[in-house]
Amino acid sequence: MPKFLTIGYGDEAGYNRTPAAVRDAAHAHDAKLREQGALIGIAGKPVQVRNPKAEGLETTEGPFMSSSLPVAGFAVLEADDLDAAIALVSKTPCAVAFGVVEVWPLELPP
Image 1: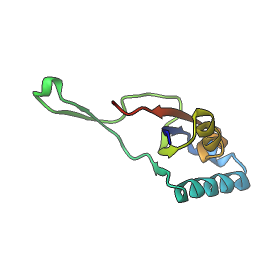
Image 2: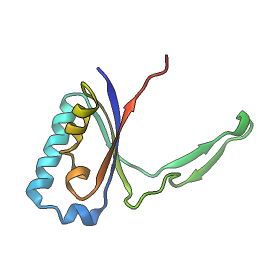
Image 3: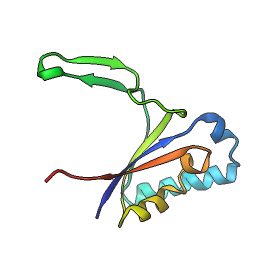
Image 4: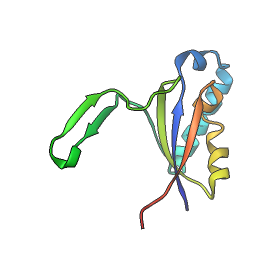
């Protein structure tokens, strides 16, 4: 079954202005996805890693990407196709609490 990487963006202000019942349903939906095998996690503090020409490791604290909303979490899930993956994430906390979720098809190398 195809796998999808999702990136959820959202902030506390959007979360707090979402009705509690909607938030609770979204968290219950995430719990169901976990039970079905999805790997879901909250974003920690990122570190950028570079190793130009494999001659010297360089690390920088902080994100490389920038967005109007902070990265809130990630998931790897299975779905029949992109439309099914979109339907699954449409009920997650970031999607319902004034955030956004990116869905990336995870293509494995040959």
